[in-house]
Amino acid sequence: MSTGVQPGTPAYRRVVVALFAAGVATFALLYSTQALLPVLATRFGVSAGASAWSLSATTLGLAVALLVVGPLSDRYGRTPLIHASVLLASLVGLACALAPSWPALVGLRLLEGVALAGLPAVATAYLREELHPGSQARAVGLYVAGTAIGGMAGRLLTGAVAGAFGWRWALASAAALGLVCAVVVRVLLPASRQFVPRPAGLHAVLGTARQALSDRGLLALFGIGGCSMGVLTVLLNTVGFRLALDPFHLGLAAASLLFCVYPVGSLSSALSGRLADRYGRRAVLPIGCVVALLGVLLTIPASLPLLVVGLALVIAGFFAVHGVASGWVPARAHAAGLATAQAASLYLFAYYVGASVFGALGGQAWNAAGWPSVVVLAAGLVVVLGVLALVLRRTPTLLVAVPQPRTSR
Image 1 (spheres, rainbow, N blue to C red):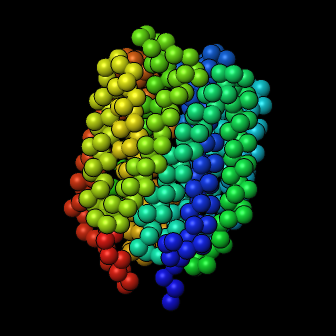
Image 2: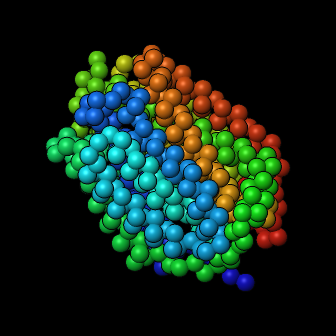
Image 3: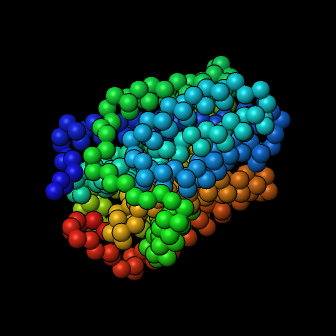
């Protein structure tokens, strides 16, 4: 019986590089408007809170589509959805650059979220099925590291291009990056070999969802996904508006340089994956929560160096938490005999609903009382994360027939 692709082999490297590239494309496209929120607000004559809908519409479309795409992948396979998702999302990204009005842009961004759902819905399930058990958390960490690089590229690239050529060329540049990554994924990603189809009828899907929602550990992980993404979205949606005001007075291109701290997330995700393989996920998750809370508090003073360090720590804590939790979901679902892609989709549904809801609330908090109100909201979400991490530490481990030492489930 195959134990999956072994680390260090050419096939392992192809998988990791392909999903790294797919993560870069997906999250560059997803966050391509976040650095542009101030300029979009000005160009279209909308408020700071309303401008956040160029991102919230995308995450909302992504969240809803995940509920459909995950079960479909359990029936029809992983790799076709990954290929289609990266390509279609890149093409919709090009259409966003041509949007004639604010409603058209928000509508296209909603459609882009639907197109993007194919990768996050199945990536961790693909890794769990195709790779050796001892390397799965590490590989998930590297995949999430690719999403961190994509998040940075989407924000940094569009901010720089918009400063020189305008927001339309900025969105086109993100779409071009997505198309390049789509070619890399097409060439390198091996077809699934360990995939076993599962029923995808409505009755089977609802039954599996009911089982997943009755598991205490999975419920806590879903809550962690929504709250962790909420923390990051609240801060990054509003920091550009803060940097434009006293005492910073930074332009769009200069403010977008703040996202150069994003590689910290890649390092944090990869490191947390290795630590989870060695010490267990239960031990690593609370550390990420503490790091994120410290980062939120460091953003309070009106100091650019402290703001940069604070956001770097928030990003490091977020990617440690998300990298561990997103890999934990399919592992626990598999141990419980549930469809792994559907469980991953439920996690990501909570994750992106958190982005949509808390992203919009972050804009309202900024409109109401500025940065102090934003910090209160973000810190409160981190505290909830800590409580859920403690719940997971007290949740019994599920055992499977084939033991996987050093990995919590």
